[in-house]
Amino acid sequence: MKRILTAAVALPILLYTVWSKSPFPFVALALLVVLIALFEFYNLARATGVRTQRGLGYVAAVAIVGCFVVGNLEWIAAALVLLTLASLARRILQGGELIDCLASVSVTVFGVAYVALLGGSLVGVRMGPGVRMGSGLRIVDDAGYSSKLLTMFFAMVILTDTGAYYVGRAIGRHKLAPGISPGKTIEGSVGGFLFAVAAGAICRMTFFREVPLVDALVLGAAIGIISQIGDLAESMLKRGAGVKDSGTLLPGHGGILDRIDSVLFCAPILYFYSRLFFSRLWP
Image (tube, rainbow, N blue to C red; front, side, top):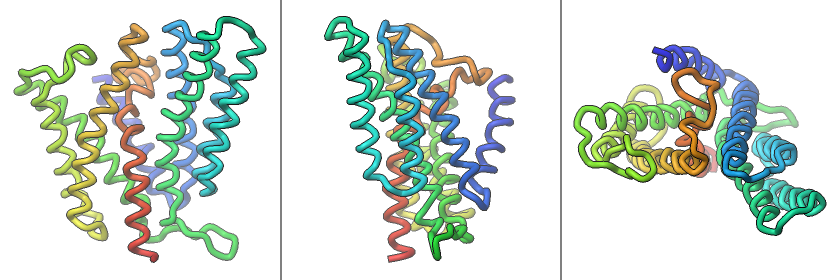
């Protein structure tokens, strides 16, 4: 029941930001989610004994999301380089063993790349080029292509998780990765994959006829696979930290990172597909 109530509150908020005429409600929500997820990731690292440079990581995360907002993606590399240098310098000044220093810097930078860089890709989708610039002012995408792309994306990710769960419970017999996530089965994984492909077809037929059917099916297939890899990757992080959930913010769901693990891995796929899709509309 807690899972259902949490979803009933979170889903309308997500859809409102996705379909808002202005992209900035989605940007604000994405930034909040990124910072909370990064906080949870650093907590997982702390549970393994690694001291991260949290403050520097949060600043870099905000900067990277900002790069997607303004569309200057080359600045992302600069942000990661500066984060690496700053965290290394700070850790050296703090003293300690070399292995501890390297672990601190590596995990600090990886956390930003894992959460902010991957998650920020969705901000890039929401900002355009479906949302175009003209005369120095931002022109709202009246056709709603960015909103349609994001809606289709979230439908695919959610239905992958739903299909894997219910198919696995119904007919799951063979363990998928017992050393990482004992509850997942091969049958459930196949079910999640098929649900994602079906989500692509349904979205295309119901509200997104601009996207070719082949694209919708291929995108659904890719997300149906990659989202489950993302889920397993986060399960591996939690197992390494010796915890069941990344946090307790979402009743019945665990932490924010528990909910967006699949989204993070799949976000770059949507980002690069959006570039292909928009290039067809505005060559």
